[in-house]
Amino acid sequence: MSVLIGHYNYWIVIFLMMAGLYVVIAQGNLVKKIVGLNIFQASVFILFISMGKIEGGTAPIVKEGMSLYSNPLPHVLILTAIVVGVATTALALALVVRINEAYRSVEEDEIHEQDQSF
Amino acid sequence: MLAVIRLRNLFAVVMLFGIYSFLAAALFVTLNAVDVAFTEAAVGAGIATFLMLSTLALTVRREKLRRKRSVIPLLVVTSIGATLVYGTFDMPYFSDPSAPLHGHVARHYIEFSTAEVGVPNLVTAVLTSYRGYDTLGEVTVIFTAGIGVLGLLGYRKRGGKP
Amino acid sequence: MRPPIQPHNLVLRIAAKMLIPPILMFALYVQFHGETGPGGGFQAGVIFAAAFILYALVFGIGLARAVATERLVRVLASLGMLLYITVGLASLFSGANFLDYDVLAQERMEGQHLGIFLTELSIGMTVAAVMIMIFFAFAERGVRP
Image (cartoon, rainbow over all chains, first blue to last red; front, side, top):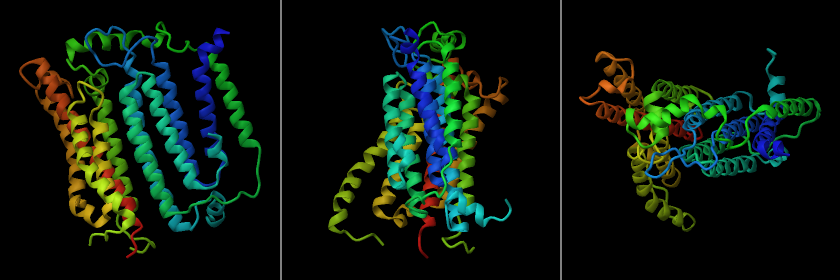
């Protein structure tokens, strides 16, 4: 029983990750795929931050009177990851705009039909 | 979450994603990660949602109906999820102070950063002083993304003619 | 070339006029207080860009372009990166490792403070300039000639 209570944060994150992954694999619209990718990324951030929390600790800012701090190392990694994620999303959306202008559609099937090189 | 999969109106999907980002930022605050919550709220619920809305303004608003529906993606996703759940049984419990994650490097940062760096905010101290080289790489990535977007969407007007 | 004042966007214009200076001030506050509280370069850059985007959305792209011209934004982004690398090279030429802040001033603590201040400033500048650049690239694509 303690296994269930101790691990519930991982299972919530896995559910969100699988929802995002399903959107990326199964949907045909390109913009929706990018939204699914961002949902996947955000759930990975939740996984890391929930692993870095210590029970009874405070935010990692040194102050008089506080003794137990949460682990600052995952925070640093996730900060970098968030900003890199938005850079990737911006580039991906710029590509989608150009694809729309070239093929007149953002559905995957129609682009495959029009593009003879596949 | 399941609404994102089923909805065909893309504007509603983007709005739901904005709400999801904001909820994730609130979750980060309760998990004692204030810097990360700040960045996720500003970047995820601000910039990412705004960029998707701009893309929708330049492309389409609704998704087309798919003609055939296959069950293979659902099987793939379920099997990956089951494997991951099986893998989490060995992981440390939630908010356990004796997890190996909090051991060596993090303890050194927390104990010695006031003497070596002198900055109260531990995350800033680690990000810019102990791991400054990674932050240089991150700024390079942002710069490259900006140049890439400028190259893709910068000069020609709508219609495609130079 | 200001868009005309109509009843349906009057509330937006007044609210934006009152909100944009505090947002810029808040961005500067977050930038310089990144050491004693939550904040730092990334958050400040994004909030600064958000103020510009709000101005462009309410008052039109032409006016916003007059303040943040293409050339200025590009120069700012490149300057930010150059400043970061210069700080690293300065410590290299003073005899220590790349990006080691101990040798930048007389005392170790002062060197660390100076190094962190310059680094955060360069991060904030680059992030703000790149976000504004991306916004204008997306927005000017849809302008009908």
